[in-house]
Length: 319
Image (tube, rainbow, N blue to C red; front, side):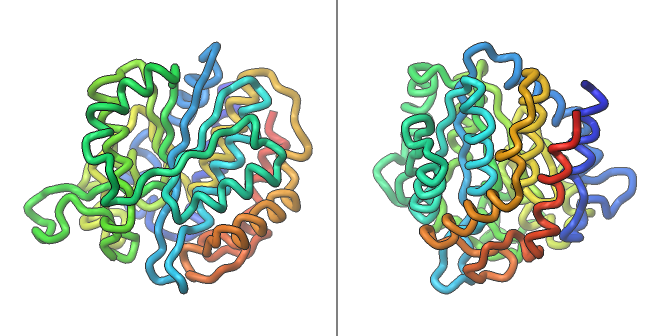
């Protein structure tokens, strides 16, 4: 089983976008947390009554109109499709700009009664103290066991080398400040760490600016990722999955949990044409755009769909 988990991890960690995940051959984003993937899979698989909340959604300001990207929501839907049949309770949480896409995806899978989709308030909404005061209580009431950040931007470091106006702000990989467009979901993870230590947190990202990347030293991200010193997220999670595409991390995590649970392979789950059809629904109904091109197309991170879907196809063969 350890060999299978290692094979899955290595598959999803291909730096397909050449973002610099392995620029330094010794100290890089891939080598920083080599055991976290297996640990995250085992943690969910071993929870007898797992309750998982997946926080996703990344705002793309250069799209027309500005909206959410395809990397994140599609992977969140996959986690729901893979885990809910195992008896895992799954909730998907996002901002208003991704809410319709997730709702449409869940409906297209016939899972409206199984998977809850929750909308975060607007960044300037009425919950300024909720993460610190109300969230820990709500986690206990829900029996939450795992909190996952999937392609979810988090605030930068506050080091002297970062210009003052960019400190503790959320940035795209291009260095654009989108703090005002995103609910501060990192506060949920900080509250979990401070007040609900029984909740396991997982971060999934592909560029250094996502929640969870605070587990990697700032200097490692700075030296590997172009512009990494500015965009690197300071918020850590218990387990961090660094992937070539964040959706691949969701695919791999789901596949690993299913293997550990001894679940027979599901041909529909790993059907790339089914994945394409769901992506098309979410792109249309969201709308969602490709985060690299900014175009409303059924693609992810600027990749041709066949190349993007290759790891999903190969995951079906790992036993």
